[in-house]
Length: 318
Ligand code: NAD
Image 1 (cartoon, rainbow, N blue to C red):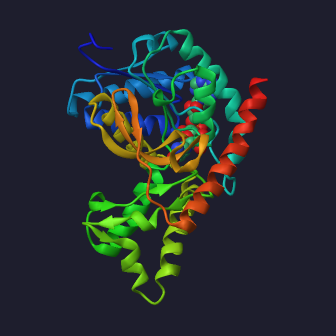
Image 2 (cartoon, protein in one colour):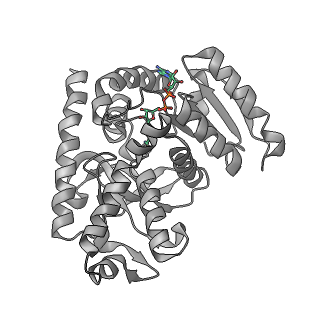
């Protein structure tokens, strides 16, 4: 990677999420070469052709093409968005059996090329599939990043931005835990310009209920969007593009992702949503959120649920 004058990102799975990510990355102008791979060859060629016509009016002269696994050999990031999406009412964890199969094949193909970059994962259940990618690839933990709670945190900050009438980027708050039903808001460490968000709600007669309502709305957002239009993709596309920018520019930005925790939060051997410092090597370090006793318990419960599903990865590998 050190001698390369340009960077390269390969996107595997160019359905709604993969293409939204590609489009967002193209508009942010951080990627020099963007390669798309999908089992639907006709579709992926059409997507690459269409996206390449956006370059002229975009910020940089990104090369966009449909490619093959051989393109992964010198890629900086391989982002996997392939997989079966949720149907209305279905939980993310219910997708595991189908998507484990898809992932074992894809990760195997990528590793065979000698890929030395960072895996970025979006397919659901993203925490468990990040663990699967870590196990299937044999990569060190810093080079496997799940999108984790990047989207949920964006949703939380969007909600809070209305409450405080400030830009979402000016809010320092994180959703942590599973990207799924056991997710929690790290209220006790959330701040707006140094002011405690929890203290603000605690000062209101129905503050506790309002905080729970916000967490619930964030957790249910995907279900609501899927009911209305079948799938969610723009929000996650922007989230993946943000993580991509942090890696390619070695930003060392603190972003919410799914990372393997080994001792942080008192947990071991589980991919789970947490803020982490992101740079060119992937996860530079995990930033453990200060949690109160109730949040600690919820985080531990979420980790236990995920570890239970990770057993399916162990069974698959037998
Ligand atoms: P989609 O059905 O629109 O696209 C999936 C794509 O994967 C299709 O183009 C399909 O041809 C391709 N594909 C399937 N098997 C493949 C293989 N073996 N190799 C290459 N390509 C393959 O689905 P979508 O709406 O884009 O969702 C994709 C995944 O992203 C789902 O698992 C969904 O749950 C997840 N998702 C995650 C988040 C998040 O926050 N992490 C948000 C939204 C969706």
